[in-house]
Length: 145
Image 1 (spheres, rainbow, N blue to C red):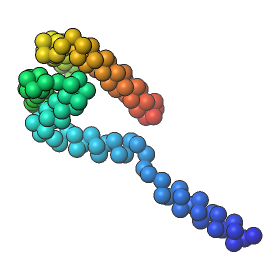
Image 2 (cartoon, rainbow, N blue to C red; image 1 turned 60 degrees about the horizontal axis):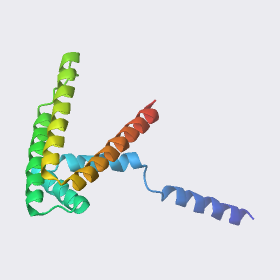
Image 3 (cartoon, rainbow, N blue to C red; image 1 turned 30 degrees about the vertical axis):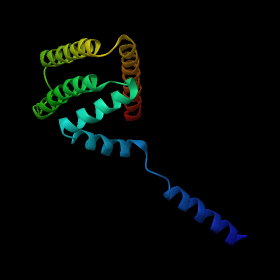
Image 4 (cartoon, rainbow, N blue to C red; image 1 turned 45 degrees about the horizontal axis):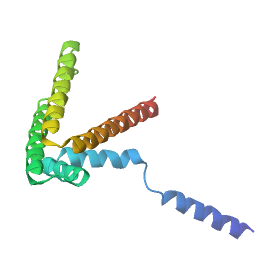
């Protein structure tokens, strides 16, 4: 009886150790790899993904690639020029205004590149991604409290 019990305890112990780490630890490494990508790599991946989702033609692919490359270059500049300390309220306001202006410009550009059916699909996907980001952000906040 003792041997059976000790074998069961060992099996449970090994299975607990063999479990994969929590999602938070893997996600951080993946995000670091994405942040370390060059803007060209980021634009290529994003434009290819959109080509698969929206069935883009060659000229649309090129236009989307150029648009995304420009966006990725801007993000890279912002990331490297980020201040060390927390920005003031007026700086935060200006950053948010700039971010919203970029979103508006992106939306206008995509509307001119895509057909109406493609644009509708793109808009739905964008809304889904933003909802997922909000959910993920809220989950992270709850976990830290």
